[in-house]
Amino acid sequence: MASNDFDNRWGTDTDGEIPIELLEHDAAIAGQAVSYEPTDPDAFRVMVRELAIAREDYTFLDLGSGKGRVVLLAAQAGFGRVVGIEASPLLHHTACTNLRVWAQAGHGTRHIDLRSEDAAGADIPPGPCVVYLFNPFRERAMSRLLRQIRRSLQHVPRDLWLLYYNPQARHLLESSDCLARVTVGRGFQQGDYEIWRSHAAFRGE
Image (cartoon, rainbow, N blue to C red):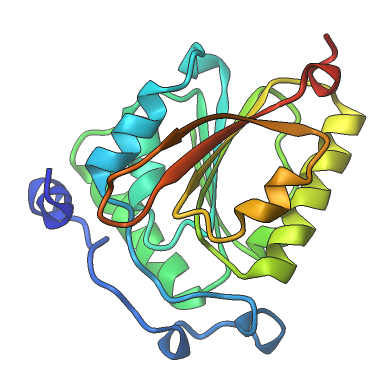
């Protein structure tokens, strides 16, 4: 499916690239943010198929959720709860509009939660979780997020997967003691992807 085919089918507005200077970020966040680009739906579906889980038992957390395309794709994929967190007021407003359009098309939305806040400092859901990143921010913010994930897994050991598309800060994950790389996918137009999973000790095993 071409990127804009998703919008043509559902009447949403998730396509198009937006430069960082137009995203209206708070000054404290702007230096770690990146421009907006939506995830290719086909690439997302390939990544999700790699997960050996019962999706209905997992919360899907999209950090840097933009206009909400991946949030809607995750809901479509059958995750029990879907949360999108986006720091840009402009993108968050568009995502909320897209969610209303999605609901008008007959989709259930009660399990979907869109939040306007700093994704790098977001609380990680306490149950089984899949975290999605499409290169949402720069290294300093990524380091903050990984500290959040580690603290969360220490507090509540559990199964956590991380889908990292276009992994520009993969070296930070490579030094993590709470996550292990499961697989790498190559050949996508927007970059490679990597899938990471919480270590056994951080799953309470």
